[in-house]
Length: 149
Image (cartoon, rainbow, N blue to C red; front, side, top):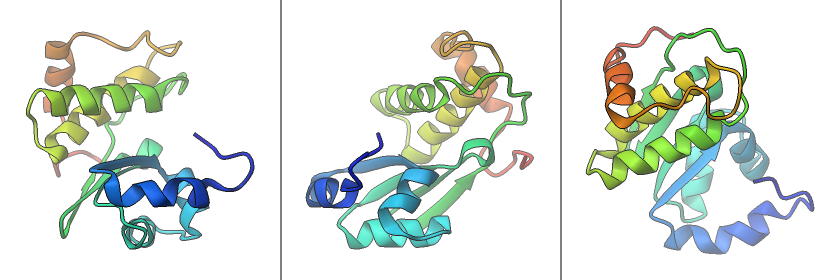
C-alpha cells in the first residue's frame, strides 16, 4: 500500500533483505526508488536488499526478476471493464500458484491470467474462477508468446 507520509522507503527498506519475494506495482516501485524504468526500479530495490521481485505493470503484464534473470510476461489481451481488485487477484493467484509448487515465472503467468480475468468483469471478484479454469486461461498465453497490449 501507499505510505501517505512519504516514508515508504524508510519504513520498508530495513525489511527488504529479509524478504524472499517482493511483489510491487510500477507506481509503488517508482515512488520508492525514483527510477522510471522497470529495470532501474529492480536494480534500486535490489540495492536496498530485495532478492526476487515481481513487478506488476498493469495492462503491460509483469516482469519477474529472479536471480540474474529478468522475464517479461505480457498481459493477456482482454477488454478491461473494471480494474477494481485486479492487483489483489494477481497477488492471490501468484501465491496460490507458488503454494502449488509452480516456479516463480509460471506462477506469475497464472497471476497475469487471473488479473486479466478480473478486469474483464465488473466487480473486484466477479472474474475469479476455479484453479483449473484459471490454468486453462493461462495456457492460452504461454510464456513469451502473448501479444503485448
